[in-house]
Length: 359
Image (cartoon, rainbow, N blue to C red; front, side, top):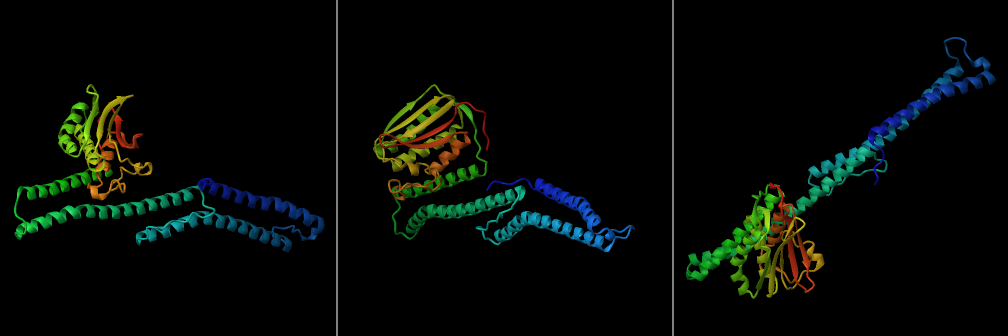
């Protein structure tokens, strides 16, 4: 709905028109009245300060007409002002009672500021409802992600305490992996919470990013080779990039872990280059690929692509959301694209040289 003129302008216009109407009625109407009276009822015109009966009737009629005009303007203004305000007040009471679907009614004749107030209130209520839904979803999702490792830990520890399981290095390594998974989940949740609250801190310095990436690749190489992946690093070793090296390593580890869990074994290409003062870091696999509609939501927390990237393959569903949070903190963006060969490319882009960013 296109807003009409502002409230102040509408009030000034209405009152000015009302005043002009009453003046016109009084002045011009008086001329007409006395012209008719002098032509047809000359004896009805009083020659003293006391009005005659006919003049008194004219005065009363003029007052009534002015009151009707003022009443019309008052009703019109009150309808335009009070209808949306009352609707907002009623919707506020409903929101206070927990009815988050309450919305204010703008009204057919709402004016500029009141119409904007209704729009802003409805936008606020919509955002509040969405935030509540997201909070409920997050609570359920976090509880779901925590339940599995905690249940496994509890069962194994209870089995050890009751003598059901024989203590062994393999058993303790399994328990340690569950604890490490919980630690990663907690760290991912911490990063996302800091990002949402605007407190994700970066400690940026100028570094040779290729060296940092090689360190991550070396640590992940045994795990990736065991899954059948062949690493193909294409790194510009001369690049000096302004970034938080620890956070960029964390983002790259999340991408490699995502590929290890969900991609088909094959060549895994890690490409680092720059163009027009923008650093590009990408990880490309050979399949199974992500549909275009799913690629638009792949960086959302707890989002998984079914069936090729299901819960059965592991992961908390937070890794790519953490990647997006880290790269956006660097004033950059993350992109997921399907390759012509049927694989997937995850690309991180951010300025090569920039002033430190603090969130």
